[in-house]
Length: 469
Image (cartoon, rainbow, N blue to C red; front, side, top):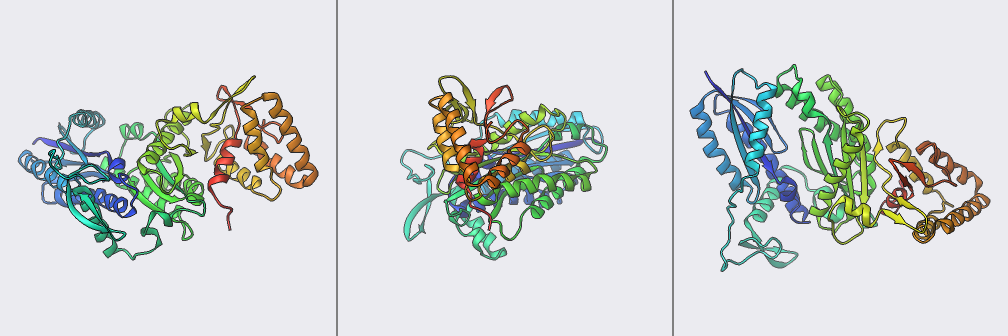
């Protein structure tokens, strides 16, 4: 009897969740995505099927009956689109030979899903010219609600997100974590969006010896356990997407580096324990003001994650080592990471071209800068007597004259050494741990084929975070 591998994918999850900066709608949208996965698991129980995976908007199952499959397809997509107005939903089916899909069949399904993603979906909330549109989304108004004592027009997607948030509150105690975006920000009004993605899963799945359904469940469990182990009661953090090897969180800017380092370490440990194979992951952290448009911040976090993977694959193309990159958004709009490098992170003076993108930073490495050494160096520069303000002046001078910047750096080191030689030695020692060629006197080194300095990254973190209590 023929068997059929069914696959479904929710696209544009980040855009759907981060369409606005209102935490109720972000949390509600996140819960809707979780509910789609839960509904898939519940619905296929009514059919002769075997669940393969259901996490982070990706769903797969093997159907043993063609008629049941057709009935499921007709019903499920309709229900999903009604649950989540504005989301893009794709489905594909292939016939398979065995009880479990082999690697070629899984690749074939993914190719069919890619084809479906490129076909336009007709939105359920199409509007006519005479329809009133919600100011925040430019979609047809379905209801007026009170927000901060003001009557506000909302569309169907916003209505569904707010209803999902209300349902979520019933099952979870209301606390600081779920009240408002401002509760995540520190005293500098800074928050962080973190995106983390597993490495090399495609190659691992191709060579799987265990059923993919078992692998998918263990991977999902490893990710969720790593998340729980990586946070503590002092952290203001909220998961937005958490499933499979995909993680997106909002958190207090003070907690971003600690949490990400902890997660990368725990993900390696938990994947080894549950899968028998150590998996790694890469992360991108976008620091921004609490009122900055979230969809730009998540785009940057995702792009930083991709750039980290590119750098890590130069070390091991099959299983890139765990690493991260970050950036503090200071401009009013976001176009691309390459645009940031060109406009903000490249210094051109009369003699040199210096890049300020010193990362990626690695969980474990003997030749690359590590997250641990970055954090220690940041804390060393946070000490009393640290020349932080003077180093900002040094960066500004570097734009004008290479020679004058060198002279200024020499004077800065003389002043710091005379004032507090002990702190001066601490900063110098941490820089050498960070990279053997760095020192108080040498803040620009050859790296990745460019002249680079880590000072900009250090100043970024110091400018958006507070000292640990």
